[in-house]
Image (cartoon, rainbow, N blue to C red):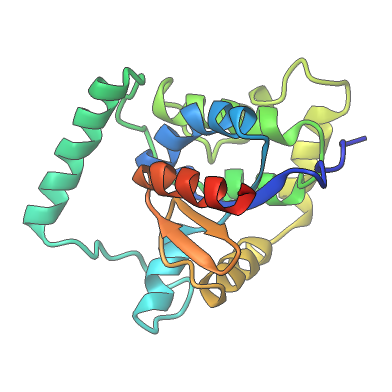
Length: 209
């Protein structure tokens, strides 16, 4: 049974998609940041593709079109490599950026003790091992050794659900002011980007005074 969030701690929502390298970077140091500040982080999986479509009034499942001009796309790719080196975080080009199945499992394992382990192993499989995280065998391996029913719960999550939970979560996020990932939601404030931790830290300090 999952332990309830400590009501004495401040809580913050973190919206993410596995396909975002910046969300991956954040996943590497946010747990320590949260532990040091007695912060509850609610990890909220969403589809960045759906968020991008909603921004321009497209159907949530419209075909993906790169929103960045070539010069900005080139900068982003360079920035990702540079940050990985600077932060000493392992990073390899993913075999696939199809994160839908992994997002579905994370949503349907909400409050399950195995979900944090699954989430961290998906990051590693995608960005370090270059695994295709739309593959059921890869997702099974992300919970191996946890408990005897963990693999079965992953399979049930994929069998039982259409993409609707991902769409619903993404629509709810967009209505809450989330337009990209990773994004923090702290009270009524939205902080977009993995580089927002210093500002979040100052906001948390101010709240505790």
